[in-house]
Length: 217
Image (cartoon, rainbow, N blue to C red; front, side, top):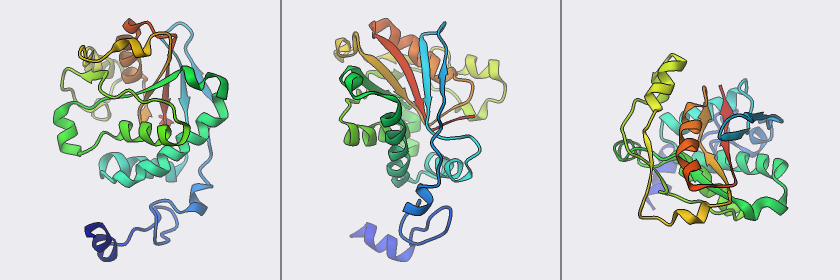
């Protein structure tokens, strides 16, 4: 009921065309171009990164910003749908049973402040459409660090994210062994967060580790 009242008082408008009803209307959603590239790093633990959209897409950039920094939780649905469209294009059905998604975790302090983990919600949207398992809380934040966006220089970003992740020893880590782990995050700039997460997850002996992000700066 409260959500209905709020929507009446503060109606939702499309971020692009301002049409009332959705944050991204169906017409504008179709205009978001899906990126056709993979980013490979054969020498690294993180074998490749799947990038959903293009960096010059203004609507996508605005949607990610509003989702991440204005805490518009409902944007997880259209943004997650974009991830699903991309994954359907690049992942054959025959290997989907070998895949597990692991979202980048938030530190408990930041999770309380934001109210939700944006990467986890994106992974859940994928799970609902593709029925690929999501493993939450296996990868955990063990140290509070500045948000990467507030760290300007590349080498400082690597230092900032170093050793912030750990494994939840109470979980059955064997569920990811010999699986393709896809680490889900919203954006990637230097790749430091994905690669640090991959370094920790690699101790569980998965088949491969990939990354999945909405865009790469």
